[in-house]
Image (cartoon, rainbow, N blue to C red; front, side, top):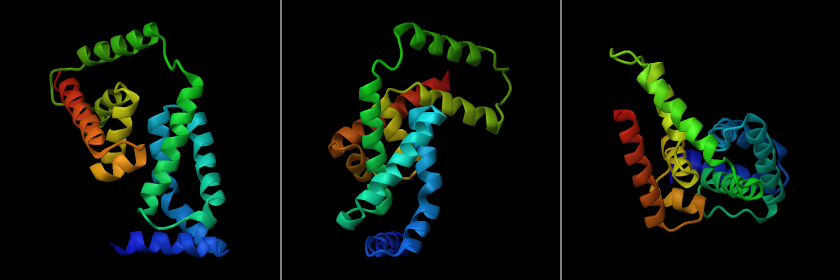
Length: 184
């Protein structure tokens, strides 16, 4: 176990004992990662902010029950993922068929407007972001956890509450889809 992971668990346990500075250190260390994940997964800044606050509220509420069984980051992202799932369930359907068709048509139009020369780094990143946004929720979450948080398949399975093979499959399908979209 590396020092940062061990340090996170130590900080959380110190916070559970009442050391408020330990929480401040955890918050400073993980706020950016958590917010980026929620923003990319929710695709709505207002919703991401709400989920961000609720995730930290859950961390605070669970401090006395915290046990360092998994990496703190994995535990934190698992809380955030569960809140995302709950919110998706409450707001179904997320998009009508017409909205989905419109988003796909906009993506296709934008792709055809690109000049034949090599894309700039910004354009490549933007294309990747658009392609990720088009993925089904489960696949998008798996890709974001892998690419942005560098989680292993096992950690992705733990965060999303599915088996290792399911997480691996979601990641594989998502990566194949991204390759196809980016090759076009």
